[in-house]
Length: 139
Ligand code: 5GP
Ligand code: ZN
Image (spheres, helix red, strand yellow):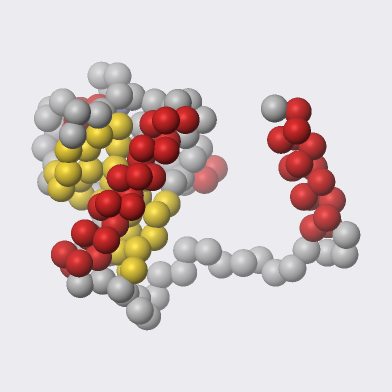
């Protein structure tokens, strides 16, 4: 897709700091890192998001995260890493070319990405689980 910023990176029309590439995937440093070493893993082929990409592509992205995550941690002397996907605009997706974030983390680095909002009201947790199961069963 010619207008896609990540397709431009794949085509070297936009420069990037690549850390990994093979025939089907590339990984490069995020230009606006949460922590230094923050890496994005993408398929060379354009899919807008996880829902548009074939299962195998999504699985392969996770396989690569398992390979690249520990390497990033070692390289920047981190303690751990987050694997993240923002899937859709309301979830924070800004670039519509499916990608995984690998974010190195240090003990006490202050990033709190998953703040809970408190417990469900009485009965709501069971009702929510029931609804999700019903949708899954109809798929
Ligand atoms: P999203 O919010 O879509 O999950 O994340 C997109 C990420 O792509 C952001 O973290 C942003 O900093 C990164 N990004 C956007 N444009 C560029 C670019 O041209 N080069 C690089 N290296 N990263 C980019
Ligand atoms: Zn693209």
